Length: 114
Image (cartoon, rainbow, N blue to C red; front, side, top):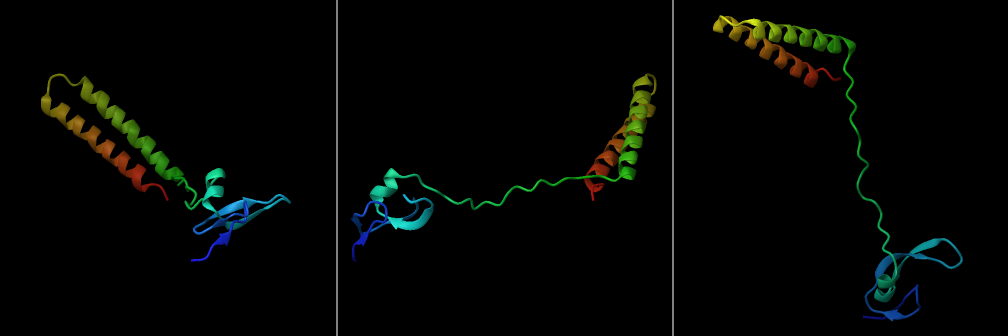
C-alpha cells in the first residue's frame, strides 16, 4: 500500500478520511486528509433527513356546522340525563344518546378532513 500526501498538512499517511478542507485563498474543497488533520478539525456532515412536512387538516364548513350541531345536541342530552332523578331507564336512554353523539362527533373529526 502506498503513502499519500495530506492536502491539509502535507504529511504522509496510509489511511485517510474525506473531509471539507477550508483553503487559505478562500473557499473550500472536499478532499482526503490524514488522521491527524481529522482530529484537529471539525467534522462537516451533510444533512440526510428530509424536512418534516406538517399536514394541515382543514375541514369544510358543512362538517364544522355538523360538529357544532351534534355538540349542542350532546350537551342538551347530558343536561336532560342530569335532570332525571326518578327513572333509571329514562336516564340510561339519555346517557346512551350522549355517547352516540360523542361517537358521531369523533367520526366526523376523523373523516371530515379532505
